[in-house]
Image 1 (cartoon, helix red, strand yellow):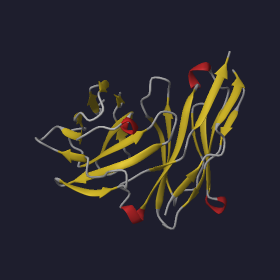
Image 2: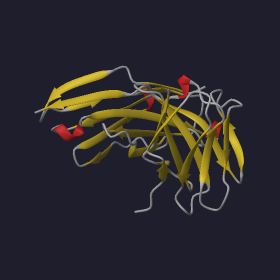
Image 3: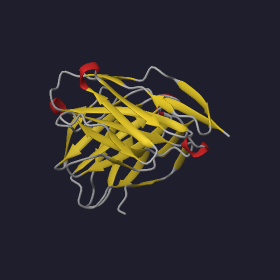
Image 4: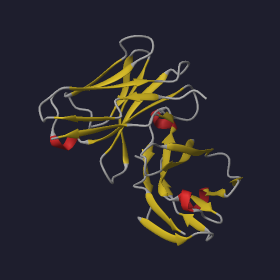
Length: 111
Length: 116
């Protein structure tokens, strides 16, 4: 069964460092997303991406965040200068037309 | 604006008990989708069901069943004869026409603990 894959599964970084989280969406999907879940809290929408551009973003997705689809398969989330409060599980998701398929998440720990 | 409320923060049951997880939603959209996801201790989000706002028929899948009541804006989830493996956090979510169905609004989740 096709699935969304994310790397790394867990990353530990120092405050102020840049982090790139990678995702490989399901191959025929056209819509891509990043969601975030701070430990013990609900899952929150960050950004959606379609046709090589951001289609929607939340207020969480400020200037320190960026997304990119550098080639035909990868979809990345970059955090330019990490803060302690960026520690969370980051979920990538994709869809064709129907339901959202989530990856297994990348846990980011900022020290 | 959209909102999903899961009033039950945590539920504890003993194996084989039936349990219902509540979900109440708010949306101005006339067309929307409702979802349930399961998040086991390993952390991934597992899709359980998607329901269109036009389809109020209840659904049953094995031990799982869902009760969609548009009149009360509720989409409750029942697990029959619960098992230890059902222990997880369960999230209800909503996506609406106004966002092109492109984003999900999640509730805060209900942690279900099933003990043997």
